[in-house]
Length: 319
Image (cartoon, rainbow, N blue to C red; front, top):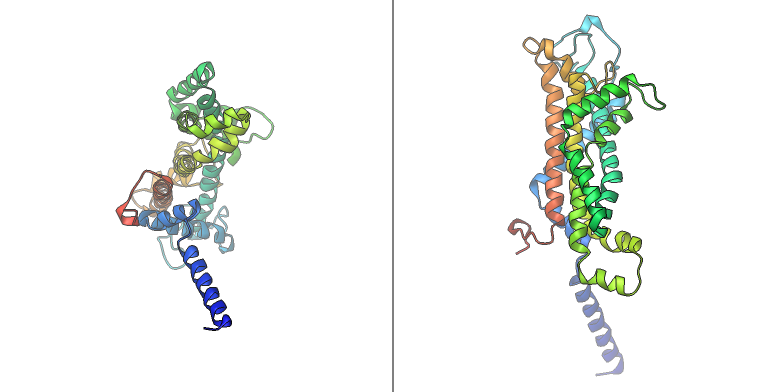
C-alpha cells in the first residue's frame, strides 16, 4: 500500500469519526425543549389556532368595514357571505368588530403579563434567596394581596381610575385596564419564583459560588434565575389567558373598555338584549374568548412538559 493510499485512508477515517461525533453530539436545552413541545399534540394544535387568530387580527386592517361607523340599513343581519358573523344593532360588521376587539383583549393580556413579571419576579427572587425576615415580610404582603376578592377589587380600582383625573389615566385606556389587572395578578408569579429560589439556593454550585466570593446579585441573576426561566414562561402563558378572562369580565360588567371601542367583553355585554332573536351577536365573541384561552392553556401545558426535567413521557420517546 502506497503512502498516498495510507493518507487517503486516514483522511476518510477522520471524516467518518467527525460525522459520527456530530451525529452523537449532545442535544442542547433549546433543542430538547423544542422537540418535546413539537410532540405535544395539544400544544401544536393550540399554537396553530392561536397563530391563525393573531394573523386574522393583524389582517383585519384591510377589512372594508369600519368597526365604529354605523350603517342602519344593514342592522341585525344574520351571518352571510357579505357579513360572515352578521351585523349588530347599528349595522356594523360583527367579524370586523370581533377581530378589532381581539387586539384589545390580547394587548391587555400581554401587558398584564409584563406587569406581573416586573413585580412578581423580583419579589419572589428576593424572598426566596435571602429568606428570614425579608421572606416573612414579602410573603405576608403577598398573602394579604391574595386574600383580597380580586373581582370586587378590580371593579373598585377600575371605577376609581375612571373618575380620578390623573396624568396618562384615561377612562377607555388599554394601559389603565392592564395596570388594574396586573396589580392583582403578580402574587402567583412571586410565590412560584420564591419556591424555585428556595430550592436552588441550597445546591452545591451555589455554595461554590459563595466560596469564591461571587456577589449575591450576580448569583441571583446569573446562576439561579436562568434555572427558573422554564416555570416563569409556563406561568406567563397561563397568565395571558387569565388576563383575557378578567378583561372580558370587567368590560362585560361595564368597568373595562367602553364602547364604541370594541373588546370581547363589551361585545358580549351589548349582545345581552338580543340573545334570543339574534344569538350570533354573543356566539362569535364568546367563541373567540374560548378559542384564545384554550389555545393558550394548551400551549402552556406543552411548555410545562417541555421544560420539566423530571417528566418522562412515552409519547415523546423519552423512555
